[in-house]
Length: 87
Image (cartoon, rainbow, N blue to C red; front, side):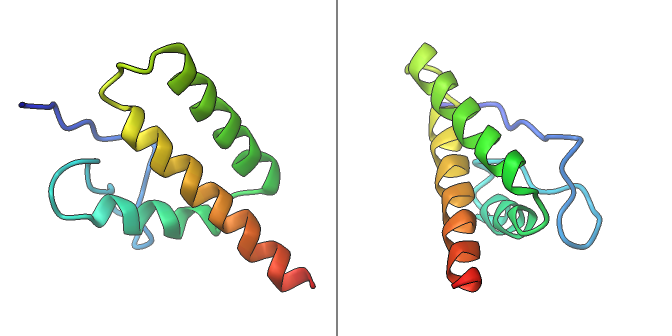
């Protein structure tokens, strides 16, 4: 199954360079995205979780659903990390 790699031109990794594409086989997208969540506001993290869940529900056969699920997970992990710091 060939899937097209999609680069998000709005997404820069922690070095200010264009991040890797999801599914490129390097795993770098995951590292870059987890790093990026640390700079997101709480409202943005919450919005991304909501938006990705709605996208997965609306079109569960979309090949990007796994990426959306990863985004939900990483945003939720960051919210949980912040809760621990506040305690």
